[in-house]
Length: 530
Image (cartoon, rainbow, N blue to C red; front, side, top):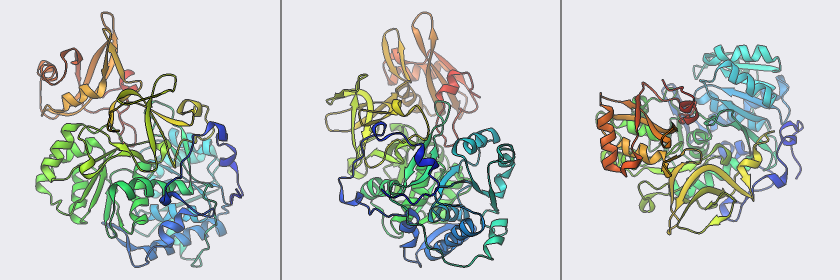
């Protein structure tokens, strides 16, 4: 291939071809031309009159977003010295200027490194150092934690700031002097487009490199085949675009299929429902815990326009699925994705949904369960989940590549049951299986039982050391109303086999989570519950 990247820093640090997974492009929708710029495909080829972004500050058409991102690209190249392959750090809540900056960086041939707005200075410093960031585009409201990292590293040549969607920032002022129009860099489909740093459920985050065609493949495989979007759909997602689940649901998918991105800067459950009502959202995506929390507000909100609801980030309890279905009439589309895989690769929709099951391999992907030696187990079987498809793991300069990719398969770190019909049923993270008195106990199974009690708002289960049993089950519970330990234990004993009940329950105000909302079980094991 002939790369358009003058700066080869990222490509030089990719894992070898032998260390990467096998990639599959055997479906017509996954065939892409050699020269491909994802930003051009998403916004440059759209009907300029189509509504691209809608939020409480205003509305922007595709033509306006195309023009704005052209200005940002020209500013980066002509005045800020960006060359193709440079890494650009983006930081801010989901809004039109952040999305335009994302497009502009790709048009200029840069590599996007988006960061969670809630990251602190030390975490930002690590990302700047590891990715050798050259440019930053920052929402001014997120400067407090950014500036110490910027000053300490001393690596960044250009810092541009904007004021949300108010139009009054430094970046907006500079754009007024920039000539309109920009010919986007003709990147190769396999040129790096972004480095997505994992949310760190197991500790030190890893940088996952995704190419320009990966951006489109995540849409064409999952969204196109499973969600079946319609032109004019309005999409909303609680996750920031630094989380690839949010990047897909909030930015890529709306524009790939002629829809509108409804951006929400502070998407707590009540605000999310308000946005659904106010902006007539038709496709909503968030985490299982948010769906459960929204049930407490939904009676007072009009969600009549909702057509599709998507859940990912962690296991969706069957109880939450049924409660949401009863309240709204909508069957939540569950799915498992990973930063390493770009987006969701196992899911089901419509009549194919089996409540409690994650689903089947998304068209374009293959999935199976394997034993500890990497041998494929014929269904029905329990084992480590393995997947391959048009996207896959390419860790950036990280020795852990060999742990994630084995024999051409991506090993996600999840234990699943594959049944005879090809459905995958989540059991646990591979390191979340509790062995107590010789019994294997999957933490999510205990959590699902706890969630069926009306007083349990959130919960998490781990195994802790026990002299008598080796390990015993401990539950951390966030209760919506006071409830006793004995009542919850008795409730679990009635729901699942009694030996699985939590022998210890600790009531906490909140559970430790990553910036993307994923539960950090390792933090519970380290005693970091709050």
